[in-house]
Length: 462
Image (cartoon, rainbow, N blue to C red; front, side, top):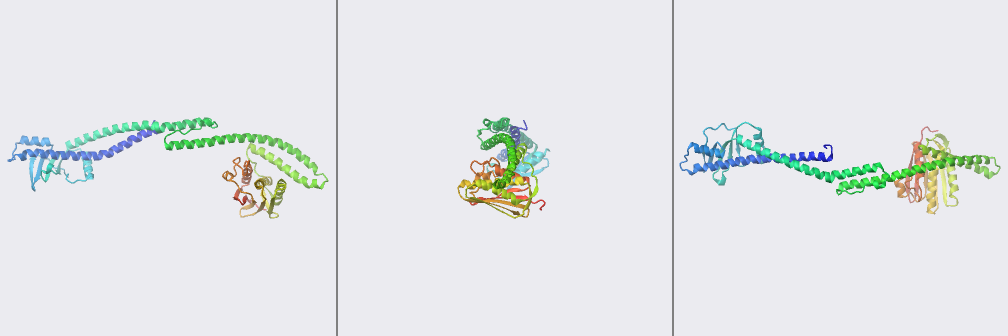
């Protein structure tokens, strides 16, 4: 109960109401004390009228005591026409412990004097000055005991505290039920919806529908709905990807067997005496070997992720030439040229098969982007060394990457650079480069073309 939102709100409401009542209580007590003293001054003035009405100003002791008791004072002195005279007085007056002037007093002084009076339980006698009622003189001076005044102040204070407690309890109860109805119950509805959705996140019917009337709570429901929609879509996409992965693994397994047979058949072509066959057979065998390695890598990716690179030192120029030759065959008669600008004898440390896949994906994407425009274009590959290691750059004069591709760059199945593309090429390339401890960056893209840069750490250079 106390740990709930409504329970804590109830406690806080009671505390704040009591604090507000305390802030009201202090000045109220001060005002009560002032009114009490002014009332005693008025009574004392009325009591003195009986004596002033008698020209001889002679009354017996019994009547004087009765007048003083009715006024609640010990003596009364009245100043009229610059002459001060003692009108009524008791037989014995104890020593006076304090004097108070009510003619021109500040609120802070009244509060201070009231709190001090409550703090002193001893019986005392005080002297009070005030203005006579109806301008019946210049000054009236009374002496009175403090015990009756303190008792009246305590009684008044207790009544205020009891009333404050009743008000705070009623207010807290009303606020408690209002908070439960307006805030707690809608929040519990959100929690129930979240629990229901957690049981079957792939069920779109369990997505929350905003219904709260409170703006902030409705905003939370709208945000939760969008989050649930994204999560449901992501789960469905993962399920499709898992199914696709299983299908690709099966296809790769069978395709690897077929390619292995094709490789064995291609090996026999090496003994042919036909010059054309002798020229093309090594490239055919190399392509078949890469296809077999790709199938094996796909199977490995289906089990976990890309296998770690087998780092070796090799000359980059032949690998780039293989990529260029392979892509030139795919270009055919289209007006797309592929150029390679690489330092002869550039030795780097990497996995040649994986690096071939990276460059092949980048060049293939560039070729497809240029061919989609129906215009002439150029693809250039360059490589060299920088301060950190090796830098390989793939640039094209294509139309540039669309916004969808930029928003989900290097993310698989999030939209490719061309219509119908899956985005797998860049995702695979980035993952392979990261496996080398390097990075694949988009250096530039725009209407004038796109540039990708491959940064590979040097490690131990040769």
